[in-house]
Image 1 (cartoon, rainbow, N blue to C red):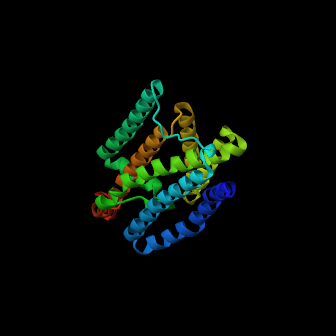
Image 2 (cartoon, rainbow, N blue to C red; image 1 turned 180 degrees about the vertical axis):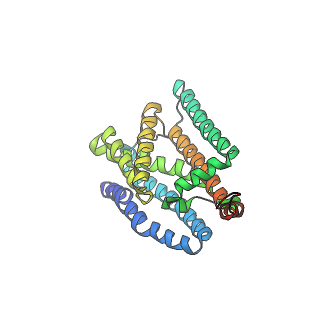
Image 3 (cartoon, rainbow, N blue to C red; image 1 turned 90 degrees about the vertical axis):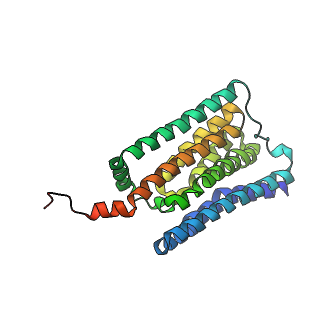
Length: 251
């Protein structure tokens, strides 16, 4: 029974849910976003948060039924040099995003140029816009940091490691993590695959999921914050008016 549950959870996380997201949920969101984008995003954000915490509860139940032999806790904080190195890396990453955001805030032309380069990417339809939607950013970032690290670098890796060893399990988990973001397109798969590999290395070096959770949350918080600022600015009435107004001296 524990083995059957574990296999079922692996198939659910690695095959069924990525396929559902890519071919059912994401197209449904895009259709709804064409009609009422704000409502579609709020509904999509709610589904993401509820689904990820539900998966965490399901994974915890599977491991609880299977027993401790299927995994290691992984939620103890790192100690000594590992703790200080984790803290320094988190601070450096947060500072990088803060610096990028402040630089873009001071340069409207840079925001407009970035918005134009990003305009054709369908994934950006789900980026929060405006002050009200931005309240979702920390919720989404913290949810992703905690749930996705626990699911992929935690539960999935622990289960697979029982059959294939830790490093092959970690590699398979990184692939599953990338495939789970297939709705973002090829570039999204590559980008999240790289993040998955980096988080795997962090877990291995620190012996804890907590630093990876923090770094993952910072990446999402910084990335969503910058994209939201750029897209909100580009779609503001003032920006639309500026783009529609002929410039002096134009033919």
